[in-house]
Image (tube, rainbow, N blue to C red; front, side, top):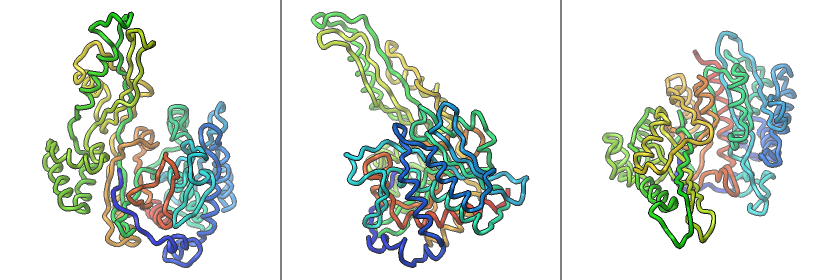
Length: 474
């Protein structure tokens, strides 16, 4: 979900968090050890092109072993033909062997980053003016480092939870079309990731203009990713003899229709909960539009106004399909024989992919433009329920750390590894406790970052909430 609130935090105070006493440090000791672990993880290159997830997994495994977790309870898993795509799987055993475990999931691979494009070396952790910069500093090595650090601390403290706590640091989330650990494991070794539920990336928090936490998000469900190929063909010929069946012109006309078309708005428990909570945090006129849509999802005028303020809100309300690539023709002096466009759809949970394909074809209104799904089929899975078992600990702990903060359910309009887990029967929730300003983390972009204080606060939140969940009832 896009974040709209503005940044503000005194740089000196934020930069001092790792060196001077503060409430977060008092509640979460060994911050220096955590920083060293985090820095080590960020500075291990885990890009698809030249990096190694296995190297990062081995480094994190070494921290677990040093903390006293038995070697037999840790392993690095990867297909034989992909030795650099290793995932770390570890477990801290609980008292009740009949209780299903909780799974802590984070991916350690990162998006490509070129040094010449960045203001700083993307593979060196840089602390500057209260921010950490580096590729993966936020997505997703912040959570991976916190989860690893939490298991280290639990082991050192002798914490014995009621249920097992599983850790999975996986590879390939950013390049799932090549290889994805979670997909591979759920298909080949499903018991490795089996759990009562999982915590994952996918939601953070919003700061107000003064840097105060305004809303803590918890993600329940995500839209389904699906590409479609739209194609038109003809026999071609000399460009001096144009015909009525030019594939480029035909496809262009269809794409113009699709670009002007809006799929119907449909709310689910996560998006309804989001807009109910967010309407109380926004300026009056925006809140009024949110309440109008909640009352009448077909109020397109209100939806249009919300869309103009934040495109992410439109994406949360309906299935979206947008053209992302086009190609066609073979010579400047020849009639095109072929034109093709890729249309990327983000489909609401529960909506069948064939239904979207049929709707695209209906909007095009041209039987000479074919519509076919491409790539792996989108993963359909129901949004996990936001039960009291999940929400109770969130409300309790958030109230202690950030008094007055709003708890806001969200549905991801993007995609995470949670799609594979939800589909395999493991309810998966995005929950980090890491707050961002209006600019966000710059994930996937230049100069990726995370606020130092947000990372420290998130560390405290995740450490404590995992304890609550691990000792909680079935």
